Each structure stands twice: as C-alpha cells, then as structure tokens.
Image (cartoon, rainbow, N blue to C red; front, side, top):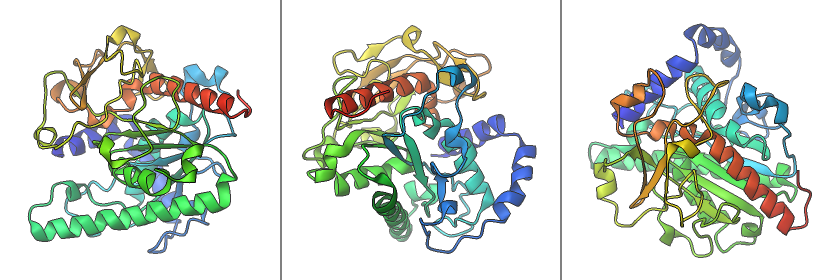
Length: 350
C-alpha cells in the first residue's frame, strides 16, 4: 500500500505542475460542501455531463475521430485520493479538501474516467472516501474504524447512484467503471442494484479494476468471456511477471481476471506489440507497445514497461496504472461492447 501511495504522488507531480495546483486552489476554496453530499448540486460530482470537467478531455491524437455517444451512461467510481496517512480528517475524507478534490479531478478523472468519454455520458460522484490506511489497519479497533469508513463511503456512492437513476438516467444503458477503492464500492453496488435485478438488462458492462472480484458473489452476472459480450464483468490487477504479493496469496478464491488486450478467456497471453497505446506522463501522448498482458491465477502479469525514464521500473506492483497501461485497448473495447448492446437492443448506434 505504501508503494501505491508513493506512485500516486510521483505520477501526480509528474503530470500536474505545482503551479497549476496553486492556480486552482482559489477555485476549489470557493466550493463550500456540507458534511453529507447533496447530489442535486453539481459540486458533488467530479464528472457530470452538465459541467465541463477533466472527464471530457480527449488525448490530442484522438480528437479528430471523437464522436461521443449520448445514448449510454458511464457511472464511474474513483479510487482513493485521501492519501495523507496521518488522517487529518479522521478515517473518512472531507469533501472540502481542495488537494484531495484536485487529485481526484486532475489525475483520476482525467486519466481513468476519460477513457469512457467516447462511449457515453460520464457521471462520477464525489464521496467521503475511506483513508488509504483503511486497507491496512493496525489492530482490531482500527479495523472497526476502517470498516465504518468504507461503509460511509459506500452509502455516499449508493446515494449518488440512486439520485442519478431518479434524475438523469431516463432509461439509458449503463456502464459501471471503477478503480481501487472505487471498485470496492462498485462491487457492492453491482450486487445490490444489478445482480438478479431488472436493472441488469440495462448493464452494458462493468469494469471493476484494481481489486479482487470473487465470481461467487454474483448469481446472474458473470465474468466477460468475449470482447463484445455485454451484461458481464471485466476486472484485472497488474503486477510484474513472476511477482505474487502476500495479499493475493491469502485470497480464498481465484479472482476474475480479464486480459485487457485480448478480452477473451481463450487468449490469455498477449505481447506488448499488440498494445495500441498507453497514457502515462503526458495525457496528450499515446505510447504504443509499452506492456503486454498475461493472465495468471487471478492477476495480470506483464513485463517491465518499455518507455524511457519509467519510475515503474522500481516497483513490481502496477496498481496505479491498471487503466493507463491499456488506455487505448479499454477505449476500443468499451466502444465495441456499447455497439453490441445497442445493436442487440435495436437502439441507435454510432
């Protein structure tokens, strides 16, 4: 977990100049949040189709071919950006910390949620996320606080989804997308609202990335097996080939692992030359052939990344770039699944 924190800080500093943070400090300081989020107020959405936000960003090489589809919605749950291990606000984040909000918007929403902006309208709620230390509590008391923090976060995510369904969805098909802590909550959201529920018919696909997904949790929703399959789950966690971390060894089940280059359970090893492009330091530069992907017992293995000056050479856990490594592949795949869903349901297709 300390590795995740260090990588988060390094990547943020690399992609967002400190001067830009200072310029936006005043903007975020003007936003006054109440303790419990009010999702009728656009301030409580990190991404929303009725406001301009980083999820609207398109890498420069893709702008000429960008034609967003307004007939599908993407509900994106962001990962942990409350990274101060001293927990200045306790176990649950406040929504009034501009640095946390800045990181959410200008790293996570920019680099992850933007993948989906060609496929549908993006909704990404702010929520009172659990502190990063909630994943590694020191004792029984801390474990209780951590579990309470996760539940507080989920209740916000649930409330935002219910508000979205009541006021914005209007019968549109839905993509659920998430990463890390966002996937902790999205796993639960998918079970509560979609599994064996009528809403499952509206599910295009769920990308639950960066956390282990036990296939036994769900009754009607299964792991995706084909690139154009719909109503199913895609999930992966990326590590250096040969590395098995302790928390994976302790898992009592084999987590769902989708190969984000082949998208089929029949091709579980794909070399890096079939990777159309990653987004790393520079959002407007697409870097091809950075890594391959190999399914291995509930995780994804790859070689050391092939690009100059990579700080990722110093780690074996690529959690922070689960999406970034496969940016172009995910973008293409979600478009393929949207097309398949809309075609099968006699809806408008791009």
